[in-house]
Length: 346
Ligand SMILES: NC(=O)c1ccc[n+]([C@@H]2O[C@H](COP(=O)([O-])OP(=O)(O)OC[C@H]3O[C@@H](n4cnc5c(N)ncnc54)[C@H](O)[C@@H]3O)[C@@H](O)[C@H]2O)c1
Image 1 (cartoon, rainbow, N blue to C red):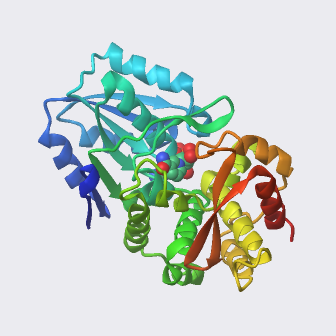
Image 2 (image 1 turned 45 degrees about the vertical axis):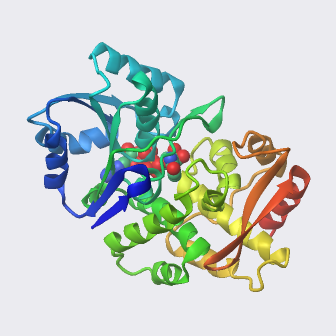
């Protein structure tokens, strides 16, 4: 199945076991060089597949240690040097092959090296398939803070082959599902009920559904100044939790906790009529997702102060009013502190 993102000029191809179409896409421009960027873990699992896919083209592989700490200035610089040492020019291309960490750093490299070279994205985690590979955001962490440096830059092609999920461990599958739960709370009760059943999942359908929801919010607000901010449900707290836990809590897991806290606060503030956050907690437990994290609100606020969307000392937060519907509220830090405390306290 193909999703066409006409406004940003790229195509998302969602299919199982689909090496052929990736190979065809690469061979369409086979005279250029390809730099494959991947973490060591993913490269080790898929090196034979990659060799096969790239056997007729001039390709160069760069790998880095897996994990969030690689979204760093150091690795960014190493990749730039690798491209420069191998004489990559503007007509050449980068293939990001991995999860969200690989996608975020590859995207930032692609957008800045020689002021921008072509980016092909091959996401291999559920989280990167349903979220980070689409929408154009990329970046690295800096000064102990998430995604402090980055750009908006779109790939030319996104190749989603959910056969990659066969090698992904349960925790990382569930990490992706937490972001899909977020989409469902934002927009789609049927999707929520489907996930809640916890039966065997139809990946093609849930990936498609998730990306349709994401694209609906990104379209027309690529630079994140208006409706796209709804996608940040749970994220304001999540970025703090990720940092405070030294990334032992994954991105999706932290977003899940953030979503529960916002739903609980929303009920206590009278914005949500029903305490549906209790149902949300039950659903998350079914997937072994964490439902809370011990932190001091002041520490989280210290991190939130660096959020990219703060304007005039205020921040826009997203509060669910029921499953499938949310509202937004522009709040001061004092108000935010109260809301976080409402969300935390059981
Ligand atoms: N740019 C965006 O719009 C956006 C959106 C959401 C999240 N993100 C970012 O994405 C990152 C998290 O992404 P992630 O959860 O994919 O993390 P990740 O890239 O670190 O991947 C998680 C783990 O899975 C392994 N892995 C990847 N694919 C595999 C496969 N097919 N089989 C076996 N193992 C595999 C990796 O080696 C790693 O250990 C965070 O940095 C987050 O900030 C970005």
